[in-house]
Amino acid sequence: MELSQAHLHTLQTCPRRYQYRYLESLMLPEARQLTQTAAQKRGRDFHRLLQQHFQGLDVSPILEVQPELKSWFAAFQATPPPMIDGQGEAEHARSLGWQEFTLVGIYDYVIFGQGQAQILDWKTHAHPPAPETLIHHWQTRLYCYLLAATSPYSPSQISMTYWFPRGEKGPSSYTFSYSQAMHQETHQVLGQCLNQLRQWLRAYEQGQDLPQVPEAERAQYCDGCPFWERCQPSSVSMLDPFLAVFKDLGVTCQVQINNRRQAT
Image (cartoon, rainbow, N blue to C red; front, side):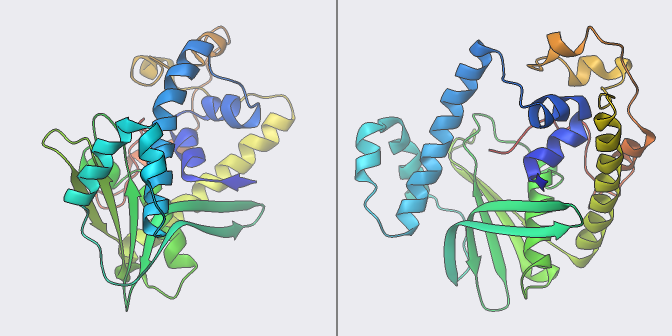
C-alpha cells in the first residue's frame, strides 16, 4: 500500500475521511468536485509549465492557451526562490518500503548540490499558509525524511523551500532547514502512525469503520467536509488515543492536528 503526504495528512486529520477517499474511492459531490478540479488543474498546469522550463523546453505554447499562467510565470522569473548550485531534477520521485507500506513522494524540483540538497515546491494557493503551518505539514516532514533516508545526504544537509506566486505582497518563499532531531522525530511518528493504520485496516476488513472526529471537535474539522452527509448519520466513534501523539509533539517537530490545509 502506497502512502503519500496527502494520505498521511488525511489520516491525521480524520481517519474516516481517509476511509472514504482512499479505501472506498468515493467521489466528491459534483459541484465541489468541479470547483476543486478547476483550481487543481491550474496548479497542475503551472507545475507542468515549470517542469518544461527547467528542462529547457519552450513554454510559450502553454502560455498561449492558458494566459492566466502568464502572471505566475512572470512572477517566477522576476522573483524566483533562492536556489543552491547543483544538478536540478523536476518531478523527482522517491520511495521507501516500510513493511507492507511504501512511502512515496514526487518532488516538484530537487537540486542535488555539493554537500547539500534543496527541495523546492510550487504552491498556487490564493492564501499561502503561514510558515509555522508549513513546517509541520506532512509534505515538509515526509519529503525531507524520504530524501534523507534514501540518499547520501544527511538530514542537516537538506532544506525545503516553498514558493508562492500569489502572496499578499507579491511572490514569496519560505525555506526550512531539516535536522537530525527532526528526522528521528518523524521516524518515530511514522512508526506509530503506520502501526495504528495497520490496526485500523484489520478492523476495517472485519467490517468496522475507521474512527470519526470526536463530536466535540466537529465544528473545527467537519465544516465543509465533502463527506459530511455520508458521515454524520452513523454513530460517532471517538478517535483512538494514538492521535494524541500528534498533539503532544515538541515545537520543532510536531504535527498539528488542526492543520487541514493540503499541499497541492
